[in-house]
Length: 241
Image 1 (cartoon, one colour):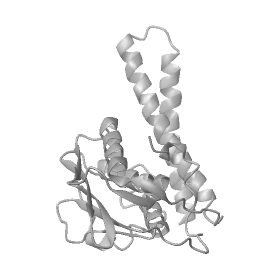
Image 2 (tube, helix red, strand yellow; image 1 turned 90 degrees about the horizontal axis):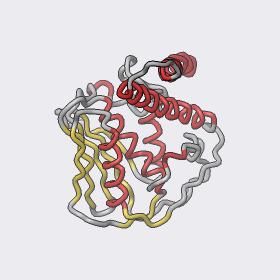
Image 3 (cartoon, helix red, strand yellow; image 1 turned 90 degrees about the vertical axis):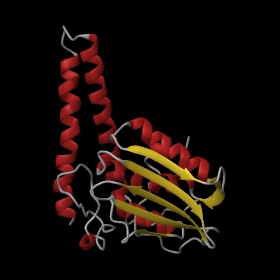
Image 4 (tube, one colour; image 1 turned 135 degrees about the horizontal axis):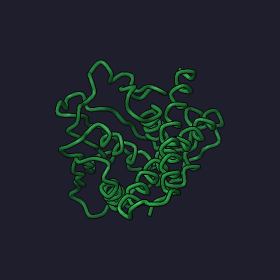
């Protein structure tokens, strides 16, 4: 699996790097019209962001066995945080699908690790956008008796039932032709465990895919050995606004 992952990463890194180098060289030439320059800059920025994400994933993998991570539980208004995350993904315009934030509450405070929660929700929304070219992507929040429930629902191609058991495994890619390292959902599983909650795909939803995350109402005690997955804090873009 690791060998396959390294081969995949080699391809994934070359793709945005070639675009950055190629359009950078074109920008250095004379005779580019202003509208062409603007388009080339957008392409370079898009591929720079993709390359940053790939490198961040590799850095996370390098800490896989470190066991040095400790979650930092502090009070957080998860409704406001989730709203900002949904708005940020809307502004990226990575899909023609419409992002919807659904919450009956204007505010709800939980003790959580803000960076980890933001990472989890962002991964779920990015994945939904990747496989949903049109329609809707809904981030929904609701409180329950013992936990607070986040769900991301899309109207995309969905995930076959026979794949539900492997989607949270490391390096597993449902579609080998899509960009990515295959680490997003395993990272979500690690975050959910670290926060004391649980994450799963709703087997009863058939119009796309729906991922559900249950966050406990009280912060869990620190685990003695948290070695299942790496630290994410090297990815500075996870810092909340």
